[in-house]
Length: 205
Length: 205
DNA sequence: GTCTATACTAGGATAGAC
DNA sequence: GTCTATCCTAGTATAGAC
Image (tube, rainbow over all chains, first blue to last red; front, side):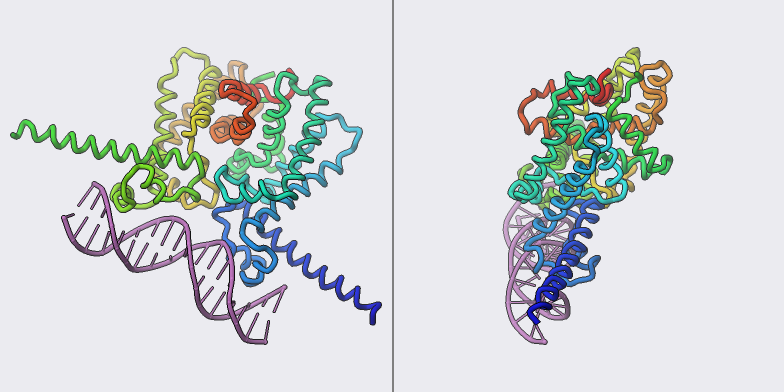
């Protein structure tokens, strides 16, 4: 009896976590599709297939739910950074990150940046899990940026912070949506276009 | 008597138009600050200093009000395009437009792009004044882009439409807000950084 | 065409049974 | 921890007097 008890608890917990993962995943998709304000909790609950009250047992508020989705995408980003070969050139890693982020956005899985005034923004600024990951990601990328500037592959005249923000911005670049809506380019072509304009600029070389 | 009547009517109409301009201007600022969903009609009315019901005499819905603000910024853009010296090089005109748009955004007067799913988006797609101006702006810029690609100042390998969207995107670039929040750069420096990364890219030349 | 006061609804959150 | 049913605030929109 006592030998089986832990297994049952673990199974229950697994179910619980799977449920929560399904909720966060749905929230993530809706955040990508319509943003925090236009996403409704009813909608999330309906998509997951549970009652709204049940959802509120898992997350105390809409902000907390959205914040969990934001933490999730930050963690996915960190996992991707960790998966990059350590001996790649810094600029190659940076290009790989942008490529990955653009692909995630094309897959409809990149939550939109919350507006300056959004209640979500305030919640995130009080969320340790989010802030910690944000700092870690920024530090990792910042190191690669400085290394790439030192080895002559990135423009050393640009402040590293400006480069960092410019890379972040590619993850929520509206150009992707426009091009996809136009239907003239394949997803692969869109990725290459964004990478080209980001690193090489619009001007002829 | 009959000689003064037209003047009185004109004066009344001027007052009316001035009131409407004040409303639209306020809506424009709030759209830039917090986006369509987070902006409330109460807020607009309060900022203008009129009752909400009065505002609804001028604009039949929140969407119509926001659409008027969007038409206004498109018209301002067109006016700016018209003000550019005809003998400037195409690429110089394009840089000037981006510079202008970035400055408008830094001044807090560039309405945020409505999300894909926003009710505002639908309203704009049915708004002739908006669509006409959008097409006109796109045509003007498109012509300059092709000319700049032909004269070797812009990368001819990029599809013109991708260049166009990339330029449009600078008008709502979140990088500006990030850098401004950081407080390390002056507005002039931010403008130069955005122009540099946009046209010359992040990579060293 | 401006106001005050109010109708109406969407949507975030909770109560209470199981 | 899931459900149904309900609460309650915020916010769009309108009625009706002046």
